[in-house]
Image 1 (cartoon, rainbow, N blue to C red):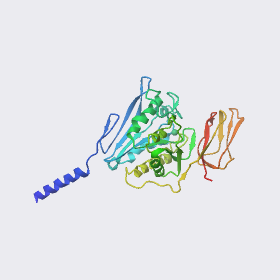
Image 2 (cartoon, helix red, strand yellow):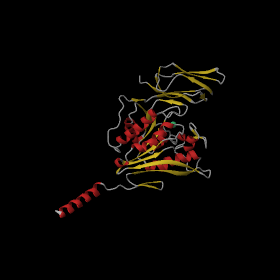
Image 3 (cartoon, rainbow, N blue to C red):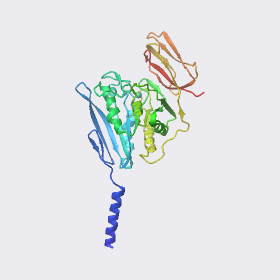
Image 4 (cartoon, helix red, strand yellow):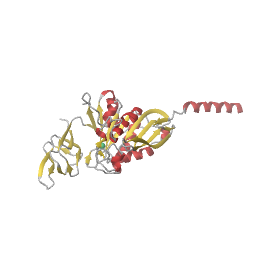
Length: 347
Ligand SMILES: [Zn+2]
């Protein structure tokens, strides 16, 4: 009897050891994250001016093997809903039930966030999402781009770069990806797994020698399945947008089999394959009652650009039958800036 118990105990122990073999700890930038745990830390990055910025990370390392998913927010520091979503996300993931690893870069451009700056890093005046693949010894924004394109992407099997309308932009939520190379099919599947109803494939229109510029395009050029997720607008922090982003990211994790359960699915996803835009011909003031998501007919009057005294300089009308994907919504407007971006309705 006692012998039988001993044998049973041995078998049980062997069984546990076999089925619960611990995966290795995840190593990232000097941090060691044991399986089934998460860790938050900052990674110092030399700015080139003798000091450093610290990039805030959380890594969640699961108990079973699986892919590494990189999640980025704050490439634009005034886009708050994705930043808030990535702060909440780690609490929504049970690392004990996670397959693979999630690397969260909470705010890629900390200086723009702290400086309340749309588009640009106030430290060097550069737009991080026009700076890829960056420069190892460049300005601080170029160094951040280089870090993401090399140190981070080299560790990721999948990447989602999270944006919203910037502080001055209205935007209808969408999932964008690049129809480029071998990663296109996996990126397309990820886009549909967000449950977002507007899907925006971007063409692979990179001329020879042209740089990626955009974070998502850099990932695509490196053949990493990747998305730009856009949700939120006008510097707002609304819970609806934040929840929609966390919901989409958790759904992507289910799609990638990192968590159990079925991914979300939009009822009638609308793939926006043709785009149009209108630029301002003047520097001045924008006045508009149009809004993102609005259905427009060609020729419909959408906005007026005036000088600072109120004299009309330009009437903006819709150039196509379509929907407004994103648009400038606050008064300042500069010559040459895109005011409206449309998705063209299929004929
Ligand atoms: Zn952005």
